[in-house]
Length: 446
Image (cartoon, rainbow, N blue to C red; front, side):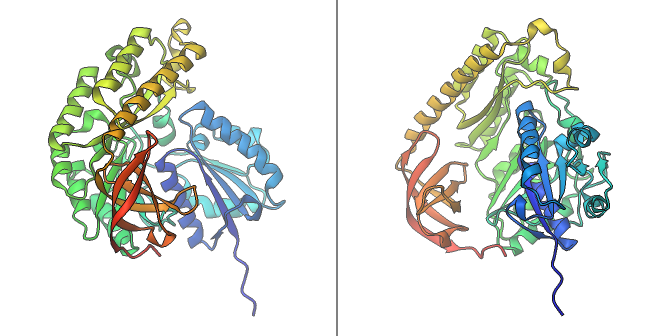
């Protein structure tokens, strides 16, 4: 007898690490239902576009991509939209894109196999209900990265910053049980990985009712075989002394924190409903650096928020200089329908020209500081984990514990191993390095 041909699925992911993790869960669910992954939409029986809604530009990219898919997909293929944009727009996508059969929000992935089968019978569907009990504990994710693993520990957000669509697309905050996170961490080690990244919208507000984020860091860091432990994205308000002590005392916790600032102006932060002041943010930075000297810091910053004056923006620039971020993800304010910021007085909206000019000045300030600090690191030796092949042939991309990217020469068989490198050069944002001592390879993930 000939073996039955298995159906195929192609997943394209936009947005944050949480979306990447969700795509791994989706692929795992469909693989368990008999699907094989393919790397091109033309070859797929099912195409899923996992989407982001955090900025308008991200949604416009997806809309354009859906149009491209119409001409590239097989005649009988099923096209679905998942993720935050699916949650936000729901049936509107089905109405505007007739070739889309499925629209599924972040809490609806359990029903995907059935929805696909129904779509083959001509039934189009939009599934966007929140499920506050859903953590997909019984799913076996198919991980894209074989060197480090993303572990979602919390879904949703309760902060409701005035510019942010996440509470609308991800729902209220809820956390997994600590024991389940530890179980998944042990499975990751068994697969050959030694670095994990804990994910949550405000990850350090984690609580399962019995344990807080400090408990979680200590428990995951104690799993035999875990050498590096990271997390993203925290909220400045949730760095309790307990959490900072756990970071400093858990050897696996890496010397890096991504600490979203959004603005260096107390006035703007208040309008954003960030719930901390400029001084409060600085105090959080000081406590982290006191507990973990040499910790590197990256951040998120928005320019052009409604009502932002030149003085407000100057305060952001001085905060960047004073704190000395190692990198920053910088954005112009993007109004999202349904958020309070869109209801602010029209005359307070910053013009695109002014916002663009401020963004350019901010990027220049960030890069100047990065380059100065990176030049000061040349000649140092650092432990790196070699993560993947670099874009240029014959080179590999590696990462230090404090989240610096280092490009080193080497063969692909070094991926997944640790090495000591000497930092030999910098572009201002990344380093070049030379391996001075290779360490024993870890078994690669299966």
